[in-house]
Every structure is written in C-alpha cells, then in structure tokens.
Length: 472
Ligand code: C2O
Ligand code: CU
Ligand code: CU
Image (cartoon, rainbow, N blue to C red; front, side, top):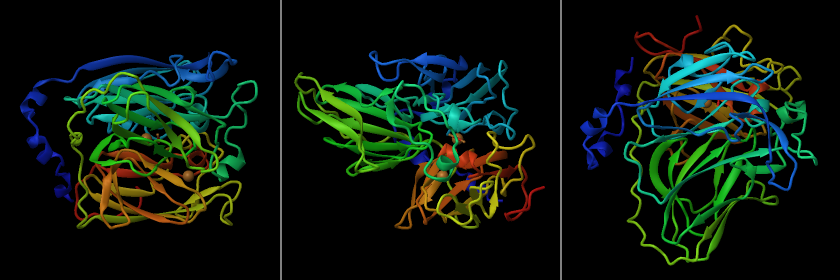
C-alpha cells in the first residue's frame, strides 16, 4: 500500500501566498440549492431572424444554468427528469463520492421520466467543470443538455472580466430542426456526429467579446460537443493557459494553436495589449480548409488602462500526486472503428480484445459490468493506452485526476482526460483515490456508446503490495 502517494501537492505554493491558510479553513463552506429540470423546449439558436429549434435543455436554458460555488461549498441539486427517456446528471471533473457520479447501472439507477434524484456533494477543487447526462449522451448532450460548473477560488485572481465560452456544435436541417439519425453506424465507426453549426454559449458562433485596451480577462472554455475536436488559435495578443480541465498549471503563453477535445476545459488569462479599436479573432483550425470562427475580440475606442503585473498563476488544487516507484502498470488496447478488420456490427470498438454491446444507450445492462481493472485505494496506476485505430480518442477517466507522459519524458499537468492520437500510445499516471466503480470512456459520445468504455474498481482495502486482481 503506497500510503506515501497520499502526500498532497500545493503546500509550497500555499505557504508562499499572503493569505494565511487559517483564514481559509475558518470560513465554512455554504450549501447551495438548485433544481435542474431536463425537458424539451424551443430556442432560437441561429438568432432572431431564424426559426426556433426543438431542443432538450436544463431549465429551458442552453447551455443550462451555471452551477457556481466557492471552493469548499456544498451543492444540493434536485434533478427532475421531464424527458420521455431515462437520464442522470454526471458532474464531469468534480471529485465526489462514487454514488453521486451519475452513471446509470454503475453508480445509480437511471432516473425515469417524471422522477427525481437528489445530488449533494462538496466542491473540493476550484476551477471550470461541467455537467451533462450519462444516458444516451450522443443524443441528450447532442440536443442541448449540458452546462458549466464554476468553482471560484477562495481568493479569485484580479481580472476585469470573467467570461465563459461553451463551444459545441449541432447538426441542423434547412428548417433549423435538429437532424435525425443519432448514433448512426457510420458516425459511431468514424469520427462521431459532427454538426454543421458551431455554437458558443448556445448561439451560432462567433461570440463577441468587448474589451478595453489594457484589461485582464479570464476566459473559461468548455468543449461540450458530442464529437468535435477543436484546434483553437488566438490571433493577436496571446493568452496564458492557466488551467487544464479545471486544475491550475504553471502558466504558459498560447503561441501556437491547441487541441481541445470533447469534455475538455481550458482557463486562460488574456491581457489586452492591443490598441483601442483593434479586433482579433479566435479560430478553430482543426480542419485547415474549413475553419470556424469561435470568437471576435473587439477593443473599444477608449484609451488603454494600465496593465497589471504579469500573471503568476492560480493556486493549485490539493491533488494526490502519483508516486511512480512501485506503481501498478496496466495496459489498455483500443481496436476497431472504420478501416479496421476487428470491427463488427456488434462490436465496433474493442477494449483489451473485448467489445461492449453498442445497442445499449446505457453504460451497462442493469447489473454493473465486470471491471477491467481493480486497484487498491491509494495506489498509483500507470496506464499505457495503445490506440490501434485510425481515429482520435479523448479518453476520460472518472474519479481520478491524471497526468500525461509528455514526449520529453516529463509528466504533464493534471487533467481528467487524455487525447490519444490514431496509431499512437499515451501513458498516463494517477492515484486511485476514491472507492467504487468508475468509468473510463472515449468522450466522443458515439464511440463511448458504441463500446469504447470500461470501468475500473477502486477497492477500499489495505493490503500488501499492489497487483491487479481479477474482479470479485
Ligand atoms: Cu463528461 Cu463520463 O463524462
Ligand atoms: Cu466525467
Ligand atoms: Cu473515440
């Protein structure tokens, strides 16, 4: 048992701040209560000159209401399902007890139409997270059920504006209706369902951001698309990347473009060093011949305000640091998809040689599936993901925060998913921190529900030395 791996990070930075740690713990977290109702509604996604679109949304909003709290607060969300099909809410990236993770058939029974479920959990980490159903995500997220979670730092950084861009896409017909044909065999075996309209905050992109020269802007970006990977490029002044998937990283300037997969979040600090009246675009250049404009940053005519001192970074979250000595090593081999002779109609994707039933819109068949791995609580896991397919897979791990092995051999910042390139391998490391069965899946929803998923069990036992055990 690697008790040593339970050493927490962040202490050195925490003591370097001017805020005494005692003042933090002296303030008890508040309880914040919300009701989230998933239901069909009609919205004008293309603007006031265009027809309404029938969507599914939380509280008639797309994206859904922002769940905002301060680090250490507890949220109590009453979820009411007014869809014609079962649903749940998953709190993507929030470290919470397994029973509240929102995975049907594994952590809870799906919430039937007309029924309710109460989610109550604390917010241990500051940062940008999100929520979405975990039933038929290709359709429930694809029709509009998603929203942002913002957990404010106890001492937030000093900025002039704190803006969020929820980027997504939607496939609309000429009448602005959502195109039918979710989870087609073609989409499931290729790159997923790509929309024909890019949305930012539920409106056709680009978003407009009005700034004054000299301002400091915090920009939180979430990719809520069911399948689309973006490659974001900031023209003009370069922002600093300050957090991945909610968790602070050492700041670095975004000089090139950055890949941004479904489920990912990025926190940026942009110092507006352009001149009054300037304007700059943020583009998606994943398909260089078909660029999407994501945002337009428009400077007002007002004279520049004084710039702040260079941004030093956010305080890190208190996460479990992987301890590589004595870590447990496992492998995950991904096969299948179009262009593969392993794929069949029944098993489009295979994980370690086995397929799931892609006919299921759920994550299991009532009874929890046999976990792919069993780890002892507290142990460090090294996982080598071997993508033997022609497709990108943003692999998301519930219940842990992982680090990626970078090409230079170093370990990268904390994240909750890793993008594995076609025919490439990617090693990750994480601490199995909380007991229960947790999902691993590709966040291209059509891949996930066509079988690119598994679970791992964190066993609440403490015995010597760690070895992968067959499931009980
Ligand atoms: Cu955002 Cu299991 O996913
Ligand atoms: Cu998740
Ligand atoms: Cu995938």
